[in-house]
Amino acid sequence: MSQHFPRTSTEPTPEDLDEAATLLGDLIHHVETAANALPRTFDVSQTRHELLDMITSLKVRREKLLFNRKYVAARFVRKQAYESESPHALPTFRGYTVDLRLKEFRKPKMKRGEPAGIDFLRFDSVQGDIMLADWLRTPEGARASKEGKVEF
Image (cartoon, rainbow, N blue to C red):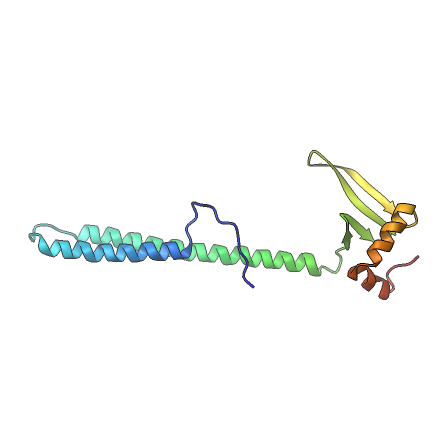
């Protein structure tokens, strides 16, 4: 399964860098061919060295880009694994965190993107009872019920 990451319009792909290096290699060949047709007083060695430096720079940039993409992908995978398999992560339902130990649902209140408190719904309240019954119908809720984690 491959992960796709957003790409900005200014970020070259490794394929773009490979193509640029190939084009520069072709350019070196054309410069040398043109130099052979000119009198011997014309020196293309400086131009050739500059083009070779550009190719080397493109190859280094390509390797850095590939390394950075692998690093970002690895961080993404590690983060996903941590979030999904954390033994201490509490289940969520309809935006609420389900805390079976405290027998309540919790949801942070937000105002203009800033935290503004926490909304609590106890399991023994009318709304909490309805929400608990709905949650127990989900696969995660049914699994918690089978494991004996839910007490009524």
